[in-house]
Image (cartoon, rainbow, N blue to C red):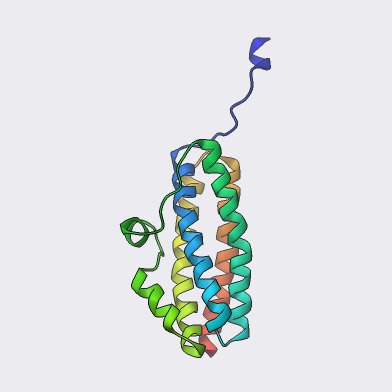
Length: 164
């Protein structure tokens, strides 16, 4: 029959899926920026290892989400301006990022952990939203990964803060 021969749509994405990718890319980019600061400013080896893991996990996720947006014909959202600071849960202000960049040693370690906990909480909120409202199974799968990984990292950072 003709129906069987027609190609299936490449994606089952809806607006929630698109918005998730559009918001999570700059969100992840900021986390990577924070993690890169840890390479030269952190003094605690566990903070440095955690930051390296965050960067290693989130850089490939950015690439994946950029691919989705391209397939969906959607544009990538800017990380600057009001969207970044007020439209996305957990995003740090430019002032907070400047303060983190200026910190070193133990002060950086504590600030990094506190800020990244808040940042991760925001990402988890966005991931839960897309799991509830999204349609694309691959998007929901990535959201589940983000939730699991970032919850574990939050627990690790909370433990670290007790001794930092």
